[in-house]
Length: 385
Image 1: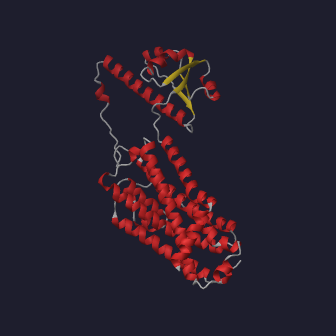
Image 2 (image 1 turned 30 degrees about the horizontal axis):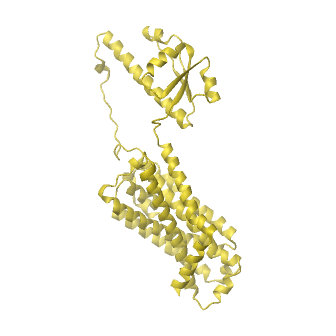
């Protein structure tokens, strides 16, 4: 009987085109857009062309400084800041007209770079300009020291080399935040319409009374509906994760370089799928409670909206936590443990103790929520509208 009810509910969920659109297609489209947004955000600006406004009197000296940078076009103008305000250029450079004369005379020259740090192209251009002037400054200092007969290496006692714990890849942390966020949102968005319709929807359509009059145990009915929500959420999460993985592999460059699982690739993928199923079970229990409490679909969705927003907090909290700083509480707290474990997996770390803690904490919380949902479902006060 449980299998028959489960198959019936699954068919009803995927027969409705609107539900299918909300549960499968919409999360895939959302996460696809998010993937390409992050790809654009981590781009270092390679291949981009920029326009730099410079006051006419110092244009000749600036062209010498940026001679090796072919992607920067120097725009000579009487008012560089005005050109920037009009949007004709991405940054403005303000210099003294007699730049070379002051440098030759050993005077200090003020350099002003004007731009918009909230604009990616403007921010990239300002970074390029700063780096170009830093190199130009070093060449001037080296030239002055050699003129005075001093070895330039005497003023450079240190050669500082900064290395990342994760290697040369700086985008792995961003990807470690992106993938669990994609999975959490996809599972929540996919399971929410089904959960709202299976309980609150039945009450709103006045079909719950007829359903309870059938010779089917309420616990069996509850289990079948819970399995349906879990299945929809898990399928949505896995499909979305698969689509995003294929997009990262074949349609991105910067994010693709962040993935390097080596020989553990198949194991990490299997663990990610297992975690998505466990998280779908946890989410199904949570959404089941909100749907049982809600009298209408709209009310149930209002209750479930804060549940979907919970995934935002672990993303913000763990964004500044390294994988070597993750401890027991990060894997024992539901929702946060999804982000913590997937963060380790993105970096190629497979810690079976952390995996067991994550699965156990989610299953325990899921069972508690399921029991609460069952207690509510057994009372006519909550299932009758």
